[in-house]
Image (cartoon, rainbow, N blue to C red; front, side, top):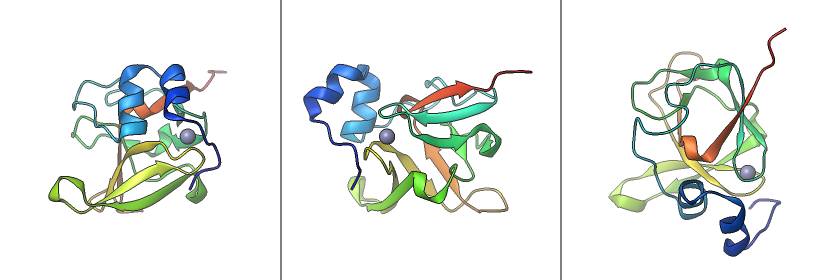
Length: 133
Ligand SMILES: [Zn+2]
């Protein structure tokens, strides 16, 4: 899994503590605290670890859950999913396909079109804003 391999120590050096906890230790930021849950600027959300383009702001919607929510990723190959059975729940975990960063989970209660809700931690993302003409 993942094309980018770094040791825990290397990641710890390049990430801030919150991003490290979320992406490398499968943490979850507290709802309504992250940088992007209420951010509606246009641009591309990239992986905070490796810079891969993951989600476009056009797919972002307000799910009212306190985390950035997207109806679909930038492309099918930008993310991978795997079953997560921690906390006595069965959920589908979303990870970056390049570096294996934990991003969040995907649920099947999203809006029309895809019916999916990618519930992603702000700390796993970095928004690259679109330049206005
Ligand atoms: Zn990544």
